[in-house]
Length: 471
Image (cartoon, one colour):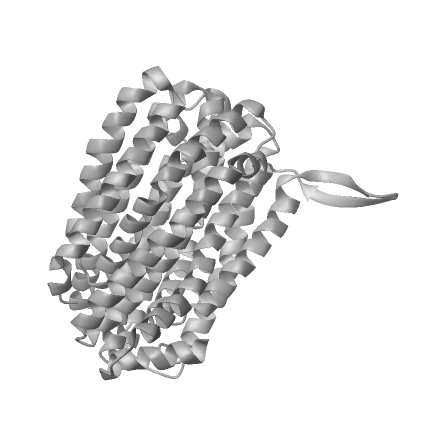
């Protein structure tokens, strides 16, 4: 599949005509590995939630309390990566491989410094964050430790995102997806030994001694961090020494970022960063709205968000493919092809996530049941997932259309659209419904807002103004 994918990507660069079947084949061949890569990150969160969930409601609530803030920092790292990877996609599309490698070199220094700054900020607020979010005092210590460990490993996470993003924008989706699967496996292994204490394991008539650190929430954070470290090391090694388009070994060039490169990166990445702040700020505000509802509501909200991620991550995988295809098509000056790839990816995302929504509605008891043994949390989590299932097709429209706009380096207007949708619709409605309806009201507000957001993104996609943006 990799050979066929590379051949079809050459069609874009060389200006050759592509049939609808070839376009669809290229979208699918890029989307499937990207979906696997995206799912791997969510499965890691699911693994952490399920393993920690077995320790009780307090441990689950500790991670759930700071989860929205970790997503904020996570999103800023993604935005920093995208500011450079879209430039690489445009240059590859134009056949400027030397220029693409130049951007890559500069991105290593720029994003490394950025993530180091984020790590310092995270470390400095880790003690106070649980209190700011309104969590119960009993979970403050675990929540603080979890966020501290996450923050200290942000430079590792940044290099993981950078290497994977650069490979995807060059058309190599397979390597990031393979390493994503490896990261999940390592996460399970590390968590197994770090979360739980030493114990005897009984299999039939046999008994085995299983060593363990017994670190609980701290072990979950370290297990994920160690898995990310291995993944980042392997991806960076492959990118720098084995990538056919982007390898830097044996080639000299400037690593110090230039003003022009940074300016373009800010043009692309800064609106994305602001958007992530907007979205995660809204999620943090949602946590503040949910926190007074009690520990069960906090844990159920966190579990439901993690479980729903299994449903919408395919959309993000297809969005990655859309960014690559739109970026390379515009870089090659193929605006007609750009529009066709945009429509194919968006409607494919809506179809896939529509099916996932049906599965999520039917399997909600099993999905939540795997994450917690606490009946009160299960009931709230199942209710939340079944409400959200109705929004999945329109959520897909927003996710994939946003990937299309990113590939066109058009990020400012979508950022403003997200800001209005989340803050004016979701938070206002959640604040209105939560006092009388509890957690149910919060998730109804989310469902309504996602449908509204999908609609406005479809309208912008159809109008086509984004396609005039030059990379």
